[in-house]
Image: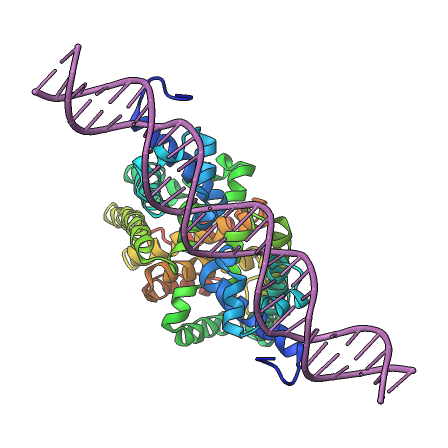
Length: 202
Length: 202
DNA sequence: TTAACTACAGACCAACTAGTCTGTCAATTC
DNA sequence: GAATTGACAGACTAGTTGGTCTGTAGTTAA
């Protein structure tokens, strides 16, 4: 009665998912409070447990319906457009750095945050998270395979190893920035990362 | 009466700290339950709140008195012995890989775990964690500076940048292993990491 | 128009959890 | 050896939190 004279269940669900995503980003899944999500969205217990049968199912939905599309938009799609892995990836990283604001520095990468918190705690979370890493990993590896075919990347390197290495490094750097609350780590480590990537040129 | 006919307050404190450390490693600080620590140690609320004034203070103590010495023993001291940063560091990593068992794969790096969970949540935790990263960072940078002085490492590279890069990469790789519950990521990314380190030779 | 169903509202509950408080026995001091 | 202090034991509490349940208004189909 107090809210929603007009009903829009899809919007309700999305609203809850979005707020939950940001709460998880800040406080982790364990720190996420259903009541806090309701407070921020203005909905009630009735609405919440109509759309999600438990907090755990909300967590799953956040991963599948928010995190996964986010990674697709942010990484997978752009990677498909890459012609020159070396220059384009360096450019992507520099663009990311320009985009990063203080808030993002404080929160880090949502996928990596969830990885660290949930993968040892709950198998149902872990498998969902691994699936997303795999997508990213394969997309990066394919990018370097294309680079090899077009003669930009050396033929004697392993695209899958490189993909794994780059993902690990990028996430590691973001983690350092998060803890230091400064992008200094990004600049320091970023130089070495660029040096490495350049060694891959044919 | 039921426990400790003979008293040993130091051992009590250490016992609690050690169990808390392992609980945090598995479940995070937010997932840590005081009752669970008491259950595992066999002590009671009375003992706990005699040694620690709050759960938060326990967290601080775990960082200062368990995590910090652990990093010192595992990284800082060995780094002081390094003569050839390239070969010795590669050897240290391979040794680590051999040591890693399934349990450690599941838990990851305690310092990085706490970083991801607590640095956005609580400033008192963040400053303590940053202090430890700094120690590691400086020790690694010094190792490469010595390498430059002895002519093993190229003079045109920046030891601090390398230190930051290596820390980020190592932590990133451990994070991937943790999520995949497999050391495959270690082997894949490790090859690239070795390739990179070798480019630093004078 | 009405019956059935969907999408909520909101009071309520049971379990959990950090922290308190009083009591007691051991260790140290004088 | 008596008194003071330190190191606990363990019952208890207040606040939190995920989840339930009943009620109700909007929506849709017949």
